[in-house]
Image (tube, rainbow, N blue to C red; front, side):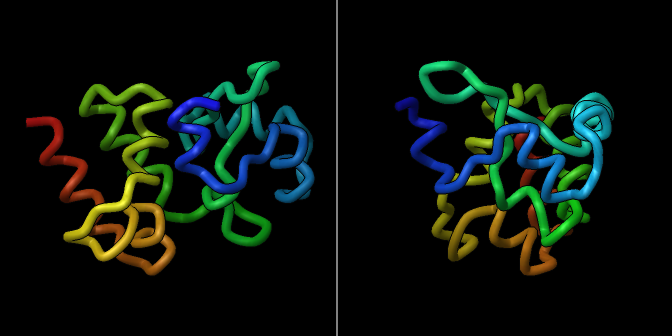
Length: 117
């Protein structure tokens, strides 16, 4: 298992993402294309999967798309985006993904912007 696989406790293959969102798989591919979501190849079979915490119930976490954009602008790959969001940070008292779920997107995006400098 890779380091990134260990950081994320629950992964969803793309068909499972579509099921949770109640949409066709083509819509999930569209979300990936428009960078509202990022997927990582995990496991022995290298299946494209999304961290379950990228979803909030039956929709994509609202603050995720902008955060992905900021990290992407800083030069992060999809793997690096996931790793950054799921790596604990003592100054945050948790992980950036948890802070996004708590509604602290401004703080997280500010930190992500600093990474570009």
